[in-house]
Image 1 (cartoon, rainbow, N blue to C red):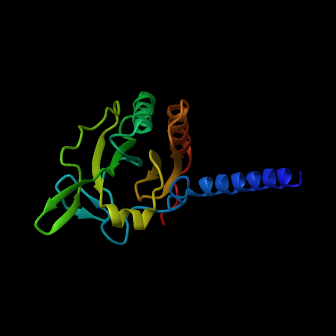
Image 2: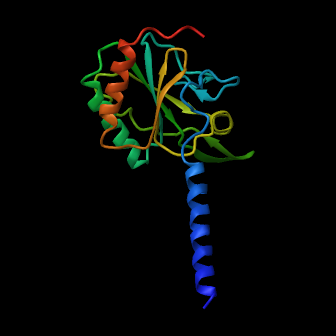
Image 3: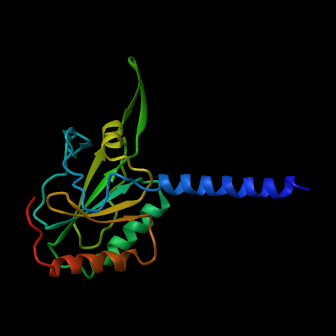
Amino acid sequence: MSRKPQSGALAAALAGFFAALLCAACGPKSFAVGSVPFPAPKPVLVDASGQPRPGLPESPEPFRLILLDYVWCPPCSDAWKAIREASREIPEGSVRVYRVLFDRERLLGREGTTEVGPLHPSSPPDAGTLPVTTVVALPRPFREQFAPGQAPVLLLTDRGGKVLKRWTGASPSLSDAIVSEIKRLSSAPPLPET
């Protein structure tokens, strides 16, 4: 009889341990609000021309929405839908969307197997009225620098790359949250230069 309470307590303890472990691994810890993720010390991205770069291409918009995207990911499609819906209420010229692709393909060559960016990347998703720039992550350097744990991750940053807001996953309220945060930041006094 004494085994049942002990096994129940053990099962509860194990369930708590695994739940804590799961929650500890959710989302990228390196993209904390207030951090400056871009540029990185070494190249972590490849731009449209195939050149490695430590940061995102320049843009005149004061805010950036950076979506860590996998083309096969259904929640990523939901995040794009939220961005498209939010674009209706975001003033033109205030936000640029950066799509960071993680997909990799393996090529077999004389030197062995290598990982390359998508051979046939899909066309950019519809972001409504917001301009989109697509970059591809260099797998190992990007993971070492930023440790993304899941997708989609949506970062709202200033022009300098400082993370102002982070959303992980997609939800029905994501569009409203994006609009609300951009309007709040747009009406706030300018952030001091760092």
